[in-house]
Image (cartoon, rainbow, N blue to C red):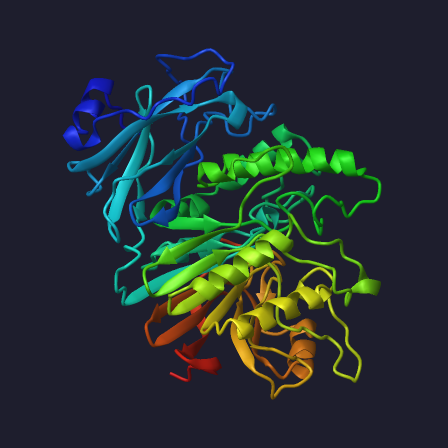
Length: 515
């Protein structure tokens, strides 16, 4: 990695980069490390950007010369470290337009979240960090268009469920080659279990994780994957979680494990949320406060698309199979539910996108007269789903597209206001995206897919390979491509488009793109 003298680095900033971001006064009790030096690369976890606005993005890195250190410190001393950052219009940093300094503190795992402003809308930029004499890899990002712009086209991809012991992250290598404005990650960025691996990628620590140091090590292990690092460095991301960032199938403050008390689980959730923030390109609005963390938010791409990034874990009612129809049960919590409906009603975008964790379409697995439904996705919260769909109809919301993760398969469905009446209004469409690796190699069809397609006439497609989903949209047409790899248990798999679908502006429902 090249080195750069501090005076040279600051000299490159020019007048446009004058002014160094002030430290957060009193944030850290640790002493300062004024002139840090490292025997090893402190940027082993790469760089990332996220949550683009028209005038800026958040830039992320974490200092970790020993990323898997058993104490979770990343090999860093308990000191506050100044980290310089630059944003340029070219990858060689001849035209630096913004520069500043952040303080990496031990309290936040020496992570860096630089909220850059003053950039031009709808522009590509390059960024890097420096600490001591060490330079980070160069990342590329892009700002959102101006809110009042007439944006003609947009391309994004969405992903979820990357279980490191289950396979190689080859899909990210292919995703990094796409021409995208944004990547959405819809949950299960890490898995919390012990995770032995038949392919030489076992989890660290080797046991289920509970402490802050455990979660830091697990996140750092995932971040050392070169394919994941590459995808982060190529595009801005917008992230949300599902359950495995904390614990499988948890609901609000309730653990799946009855042996965990609510208090002990709240402590576990607090450290898991902190580690999540430390490793994601999130803005300061998402800094956790104990076991609470604001993650739902909205990103707007001019008049073309508005992304509603949801949190379907932190506020939900507990899974109660015997009481799934209870009208008081909630998936999003009352505040987030109202925020979502109000935002959809006020939207002036052509396409209204919900970044959603779990399957929202009715997904019956009983081809007979009965119903066999999951209680962990929206099927277990039917009243909350009905409130959302009815609210969308009452507010006249058009062109609602739900993009979903979690299920380790791809599925496409029309969203009916009443799933028991297939002639009822179609309120939107759902594109369920498969996993990066979770579930192993997968297959084109499995038992669940056969049952779903036989039991749910609103479903149009199913596939259980691994990969990602690419979406390209303009003012009149939304196109979705299901991108798959044939295997993940070995590296180097090719990628192909398994199927494509289109949604027309003002015409509810999805159509197979025969071309």
